[in-house]
Length: 246
Image 1: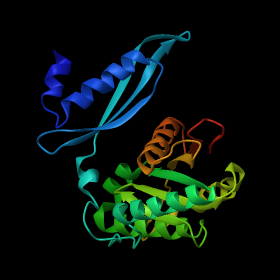
Image 2: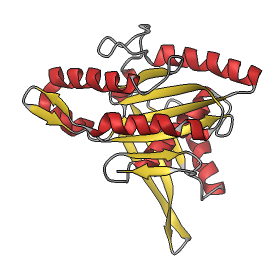
Image 3: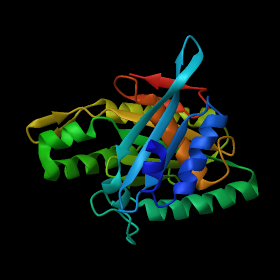
């Protein structure tokens, strides 16, 4: 009854039911997707198997209302007016171009999905005007961490995406990760406030972790969510080969 009640409120109930069936068939699989409701609301759904003594006893579901974030930057402007960074629209265009080039020349791309862990608390403390200033300062620090041909974009209100081009292997990603960690380690001075910003960062690599932009970004987001349980800032590759926290 509960499933039917939810399904009838969704824009695509068949996909919702099919997703639950996939989890039933593959109980060890993690799930990350979005639920779009008829009334315009959008919820992020994250689910992992609930295990005790290595035995699956059920599933844990987490839901987050991202309606505001989903509508945020969902316009035709290529650059974010607050940070000056590319928006989601321009990022996806660059990603698709980068994937075409990478397939043609057998190269790799890395996708870094960075979420600000304590963003809501910070915003409540310092207010909307200073949060815009903080976002600009964060953007400036992160831009210094990447190369000339890489892309840093603002994905939504509290998340950024970095795309690294022409990488030869995962070892070439590590120096960028170190620079990001060092860049975010020091507090941000905003008038009378000194703000420490922690982040979660998930990483995928084309073609190892996916073939399409949607799959690669989805997997990078999933890796970021996996790392959120750590205290402080944390980094995790999608395939679990590397993780770090401080």
